[in-house]
Image (cartoon, rainbow, N blue to C red; front, side, top):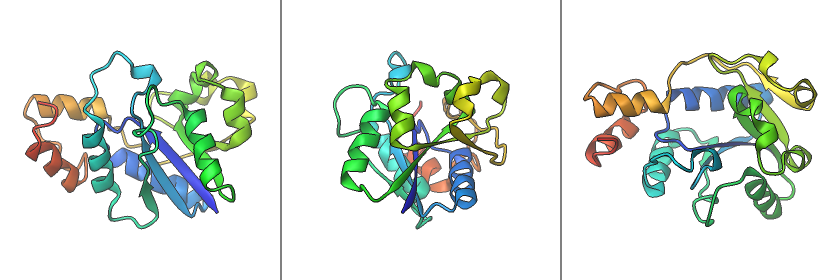
Length: 192
């Protein structure tokens, strides 16, 4: 089974996440995409992040109407920073017959050499890099580019940061996030 792994902070999950995941799933003919909220992203150790249970619930709400999307709390159950290599190895143990495709934006691929065990990640799974507004393939190490599959997804310029700012300033987030996520944010007073 060909499976996409789509990790992130999802603080909050938004329409660009969903469009990108569905586009990759469709283009690569993946049988499913698993969304994996990070507990403690190593590159965001000093940022204020909404508690994991809220982010997990928002991802479940955002993906709930797509039967080819799943949500996995594997990183939320593990203590310490969420390292991709640990997650991939644990998922491979559980499902050794799955071919894993780790999906990331080009912006993350630029710094991939600084991740924990980047060569091991490349050995354990296929890396899929998506285009991102403001980032160019020329910014990525040329040797690394030879080892990844680049997928063009529709350019939807929405960021979790801008959504949080809009909520804080009392502005609408309608159509930036699924309506179920918008309602969850409002009813739980998140990002205020």
